[in-house]
Amino acid sequence: MNITVSRRRKKPIGESYPCGSFILYNVEPALVLVFGCGGERITYHRDSLTIPAKRQFLLEFDDGTYLSITVQGWGSAQLVESGKLPSHPHVDTGAISPVNEEFTYESFDRLFADMAPKELKVSVKQFITSKPGSWGLGNGYLQDILFQARIHPQRKLRNLNDDDKHRLYHGIRGVVKQAVACGGRDTELDLYGQPGRYRCIMDRRSVGTPCPSCGTSIEKISFQGGTCYFCPACQR
Image: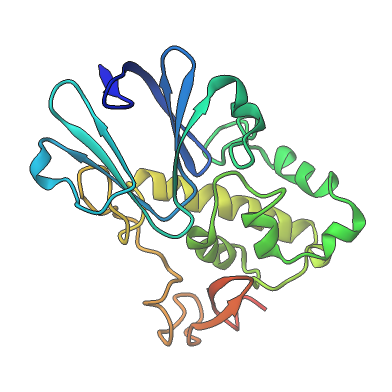
């Protein structure tokens, strides 16, 4: 299938594949389309009638269909030379995805071992969603991961014991696998405008409702550039 990169040039598009929070499309002969980082709305259109008037990116395929991207927040749409992809500031092609079987507890534990002592002063939230991070995870799924692990988002890494790390690892694996199987969160839409089936345990709809484990009211705080939802009894 050909893809219109500009009004005068067409290039064949090859394999598409996930890369953390990004989607990559190979564009022959030596380009890569990089979509992602969160906040973008990616939609497939069978004709031009449903293309949004306000958009940041539009692909026109030679079969008369389209792919549009409307960027919000941290979202992005970039065309990168293949040779420069390894040095891209946000795309880490060498990292291990939580859905990959190579994402073992040993590989997860090495993230802690590779950190300098002063870096262990950061919060669990910062550790998961930034460097070194668990590849592809952001604030949205973090809430359920920490709930499953029974860890407060403000807790410091240096205060985690081996049991905490094991629960955190299994929380990541469990939540991500379930979300993928459900086609994403029910607050997100796929390429065809269909919502996912994964309903978060901890999100804005949960505030003030009973914790499913102990019945304590769910609370929220603003922390490190985002909102965190948690059970004050289960996640001390």
